[in-house]
Structure formats: structure tokens, C-alpha cells
Image 1 (cartoon, helix red, strand yellow):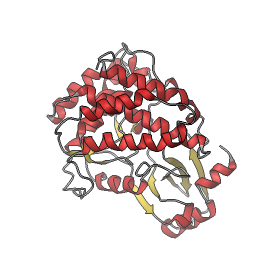
Image 2: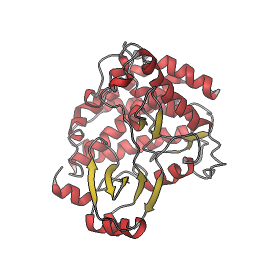
Image 3: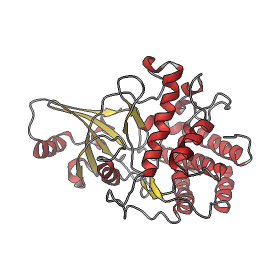
Amino acid sequence: MSDDYYERLVDEDALVAYLADHLGDVDDYDIARHQEGHSNETLFVTWGDRELVIRRPPPGETADTAHDVLREYRVTNAVADTEVPVPTPILACDDHDVIGSDFYVMEQLEGDVLREDEPDRFATPDHRERIGEELVDTLATIHDLDYEAIGLGEFGRPEGYTQRQVDRWGKQLSWAFEVTEDEREVPILHEVGEWLRNNVPEDHPHTLVHGDYKLDNVMFGPGTPPELVGVFDWEMATLGDPRADLGWMLSYWRDAKDPEPTIPELTTRFMEREGYSSRVDLVDRWESRTGYEFEHERFYRTLAVYKLAGLGEMFFRRYLEGNSDDPMYPKMERRVPGLAKRAKRIIDGDEPL
């Protein structure tokens, strides 16, 4: 990471002064950027004997609502006293004089985020099966929350959520295309968007939805058997359609029968191994835990891949404008057309559940 990009992320002197005012002075501190994420920026802060995490949006122009970290803080704070495991939120700041953007501070959890491989302690059939069960059970717990009772009754408009998702991601793509279409066009995405608009389910359950629920947005504790101890990245959370959450989670979950991944650099494949639940297993468990049926599954899985394409195209725009140093972003020039083809395969029944 260039020094210039880091300086755009954080004014260390101003941040240290802010933390000292709110958490007290310390003799020793350290601030480091977490390199794994590809959306909001994450900073790890050691503040005396406390291990903290700061979340802020990337620098530069972003599409509306795409990086709302204060919204993320609000929902994390609301669910912190429920059965949904989240890091303890500490502070939220909307004073851009501190680091140039909104940001919030939370406690750091101990454990593993499963991205590239499974920990050795989980490499047994029973533990592998439990990983999928913990993942889907926690999603069901989110969908079962009484959102009004925890103060989120005005957090969103659940009616029409799914239609708005289709419309919003069409707009996100249009925002990205303003710049990226000068480099290359992705006509299949227009076809996919039209199919989605013509196939939006007429109604859906109303629940709290995470908006970005997937295996590498949760943490498993340091022991065995696998225990899910934290759900992260609530920036897209709202009230809406739980089936959209499930479709999104499934778009990242691999089965052994699947074709080669569209974005190999961002694809976790270890769940193809013996012992892991299949996507059908996960759907069955979610249905039994929530009492909902995963109706219109092709629609929800297509919507998920359409949103992935939208994110990729937004990343590509930021790269072209010089607003990110993430090495993944320029690769979206070819990866987004691949995602468009994947969405079309799901629509055509060529990539089944």
C-alpha cells in the first residue's frame, strides 16, 4: 500500500487525539490497515491493552448507500444484546475532520475467518458439516429476530425490498458504466437485469436482512467444535427479504459438482471437500429453522450474481479513477463479463442449486 493511499485513509494524529478523548490516553498504540477486504476499509488499532477495529468507507466518490458505516454501527449496536454474535461496538463518529469520513470503532474478536482454507482443527467430516450448520443457523437467527423489539422498526421499508434491490443494483451498474464502458461493455448484464425485472416475486417475508452474509464475513472461535462467534460487515443491512440473504450466501458456497469459478482469486473452494454440506443441505436447514420456503430460487441466485457483477464493476470504476490500490480491481475488466455469463447460466438452468 502506498504511503499516499494510507494518508488518505487516516490522519493518525487526529485519530489518536479522538481516541484519547473518548477512551483515555495510553502509552503505546499501533494502527495498521487490514488488507483482506475489498469494500469498506478496515483498520486494526492496538490502544494500550485493547485490540480495536475501525471501519470507514474507501476514499473517493462512491455510489449512494454503498459504504454506509454508521448504518453498520447502528445495526451492530441493536443486535449486540441478542443471540446474533457480533463484536462489541464502542464509538461512532460523523466528524469528517478526524479521518476524512464517517467511521466507527468496535472490539476485535479472537478466532478465524475462513477465506483461503479450513483450519487444521476443523479438518474432520463432523467439523466440516458443523461449519455449514453454524453458518446457516446464524443466518436463520438473524431472520428470526423481532426487529421492532430491538429498535429497528424504522430501519428500512420491507415492502417492495426485492424490487428495490433489482432497481438499486441496476443503478449501481449504471453509475459504474459511466466510466467503465469507455474500456469495454458487458451487454449480457443488461439481459440479466431485464430478466430480473420481469421475474421479481410478488411478495416475500419481512425480516432483518444482513445484506452481505457469507462465510468470510463471519468468524469462528479458536476452539472445537466450530462455533460461530462473530458476524461482520453489516453495511448493507436493512429490513427486507430473507431469501435474498440466502441466495447471496449460496452464491459463495461451492459444491463439488460446480464449474470452475468465475473469479478464482476471490473464490473459496475448500467446502468442496468431503463432509461439507451441499447448497441443497443448507437450504433445507434454513427452511426448517425459519419456517420459510426458498421459493423462486433461480431468481434469488441470479440476483446475487447480478449484485456481485455490480460490485465488481464499481470496483473497476474506482480503479480507473485512481481511487483504490486494490490489485483485484483491475481484474474486474474480465471478471465481470464472466459473472454475467454465470448469471445467465443460472437463469437458463445450466447451474442448478
